[in-house]
Length: 221
Ligand code: DX5
Ligand code: ZN
Image 1 (cartoon, rainbow, N blue to C red):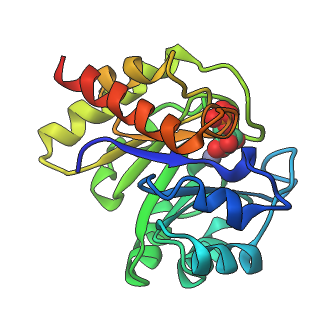
Image 2 (cartoon, rainbow, N blue to C red; image 1 turned 90 degrees about the vertical axis):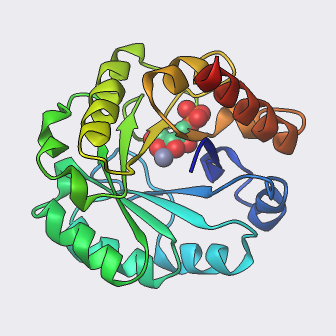
Image 3 (spheres, protein in one colour; image 1 turned 120 degrees about the vertical axis):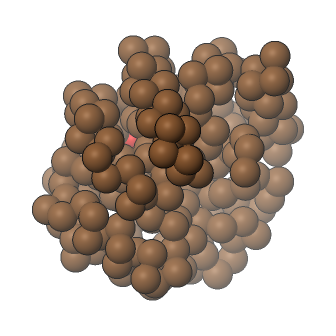
């Protein structure tokens, strides 16, 4: 599939979401951070808002669920219109069952790892997932610093997926910018979430293109 960019609306203007989504119509995905105030110490939005965003977004929705009880909730986000649903391994009772439920509803299934969670947690079941999200900050807030130590997880995932001939997408989220995206691309990451880098730029669409170009060049260089 190649390099993909997913702007995070956590850094958009919540009073003007439709406008800010239209501003990144050249992106591959729209990254929507769902936080419940329990799994992470922040609260954002839930099903009814995501459902409307899916109706107005020109690009598919990539839902990142930072919530408890994904066994119950994750499939509901697929039903609400998310084309990709990512839940956290740390919150899941049965990650394989959640992935199967999401896929049965026609969405892509993805599992996320907090910085402290070892990549070995998902290696045995890699084939169950369409994507693994390696968090490069502690989940909860935008604008934090990228954690380069997480690149060993990205490399391990890429190696295992390659050995298994599994077309696994590897997403990174947190501190992705022009300064960090090349490092991730060289490590084997291919789906990039960027919040403050995109929405903090004077021209968000131009920033999406710039990030995509940098990552592509790093892969082929
Ligand atoms: C943080 C969220 C991210 C956040 C990233 O928990 O999952 O998606 O928006 O923000 P930046 O790109 O500013 O680090
Ligand atoms: Zn996110």
